[in-house]
Image (cartoon, rainbow, N blue to C red; front, side, top):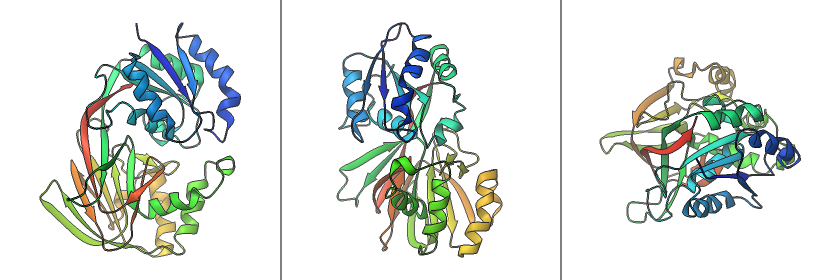
Length: 308
């Protein structure tokens, strides 16, 4: 029998999760007779909470929130000084209660609290890959973080930077798309050099570069239609420069999962991706702001037990 602990982000879903908690708790109780729970109080806290709970012997951590909550808990499965998980048998599950739930949607997790709790209870662990971002040059590599879904550099990160200025209580399902429309008015493609798996080199001006473990980002945009979270590879999606009108007209291809039809879109498979640029290029991961290029993206194959 699992030793279960629930980590609740009360601020998720624009603060609605705290109001829903009694209903969610009842749904969990219907499938897990014994569990403890804790509310996070500030950003990134779920990572440290998860790390400490795993060291205490809890082997099933259930997040209540969105993709950001899932990302923070997943980061906590790893030792702070290495890529090794604290407990190879421990697993993470998620009960959706967030505004941004792209990876949750991709993994087909039910939105209904009782159904998602039942899925966690009755499912087996599935080993999935995790992405790691290491910032800095080859000489200085000491800042890193993990992501479970999609990291990207360029336009996507600028959209997230702009959205971050909006109060969470005012964000909704179409916040990302509205942010995209406002960001493209000033954004210019960046000159980027990429090295894939230490061999293949690419250089050019790109609007966006997405390093995908999952398929969906940006509130429902299918950026990597063929990505699999357990194949040991990233799907690297590179989009060449486009005019503003092209970006808007082609955005429908993102929602239909047919973005690869555009000749300016290139999708490649890689396990390790080094990216640098003479320009200032920001990075976002799972909807959170990261640092800037240069950076290295590496896959950690089947590193995390996901209860699905």
